[in-house]
Image (cartoon, rainbow, N blue to C red):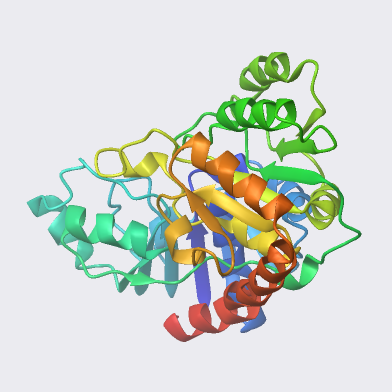
Amino acid sequence: MKVAIFNPYLDTLGGGERYAMGVARALVAKGYDVDVEWKDVLIKEKLEKRFNIDLTGVNFIEDVGRGDGYDACFWVSDGSIPVLKARKNFLHFQVPFHGKDGKSLLNRMKFFRIEKNICNSYFTKNVIDKEYGVESIVVYPPVDVHEFKPKRKENLIVYIGRFSQLTQAKRQDVLIKAFKRLYDSGFNDWEFILAGGTEVGGKEYVKKLRKLTKGYPIRILESPSFSQLRETYGKAKIFWSAAGYEIDAEKEPEKVEHFGIVTVEAMASGAVPIVYAAGGHKEIIVEGENGFLWDSTRQLLKKTRNIIEGKGIMGKISKKAKEDSRVYEYERFEKEIQNIF
């Protein structure tokens, strides 16, 4: 079987791009001939390095022609509905698009050519189904949880997430301000690390964040290697996220966390997640069992202090978080994708 894959955001090297490459890996493992469309073939090396994945057998070409001449096509939507021409077509929604006139007559006609609509979470599915009038299926993103392991833990809080200001509001600024309050309240033996890619407009944002960190044990790692990320996760006791903070998820669902791959990686590394209660986070975290959800920075700090000071709480949550991360392992994703195709 010959398969075409297209993702319009491939050079942003984020979660959606990892998802698309997960599909490519799964299909190559099944013996399919896989072509990925991108204007710069050097993207293959960048993807392998960023995600620590092996894309041997995946071909990168300049044009897959909307699947024309292919047995199957996997297309990542940018909100529009393409006219796909493969024998079987699969449309993936990584973002909960809305306000796109999704139920137009033209779109309804285009959907006749699509075998299945695939979403990365039930949060995304709920928005997509309502917007486009479809019944999509959910395949959670692939996470190589076996690559992440707890190391000798330090008094370290981390957040991993790209700094580029594309669609989502990652709100690293909120976390920096919260940590400064934590530090000033007596927890001055703790450190905070923020790490992530700066591709596509992240450099200027990082400059602003660095100004906020002055005088505090806060480090920013720009576009770290996979080994650096794994080391950082492994040493951290706590994982924070403010993705979607102060966003109305009903009005702007695209700006909250659509799933939360980094949260799962942190869980696999034994870090206790304390993440903003919005979007996909609410599908991953069971309050008080494998992590915590927060609605205000006051609540974030209160829960953080309780975990640090409470006897046995951190160890218990850390163990459960690691166990629950296995739900999202790559092997599960591979089987689901192969079955769909």
